[in-house]
Image (cartoon, rainbow, N blue to C red; front, top):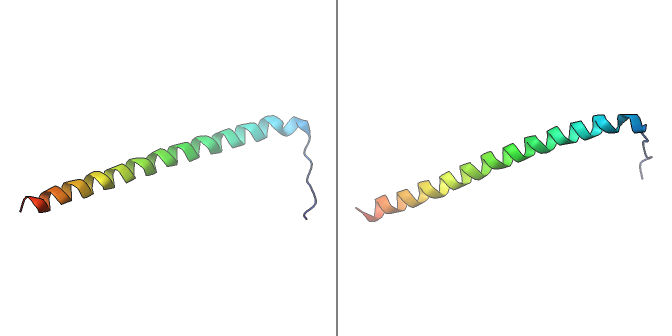
Length: 54
């Protein structure tokens, strides 16, 4: 097991800010992926309707 690395409590604010920004980025990427997934479904539905209308 790797040796633990201890950081001073004075670095806590830096860590919180760093992880908060990371969480915001992850949330934004997730929203983008969900929008793309929904668009694929709509595109597939429209393609199916188009084919059915032939």
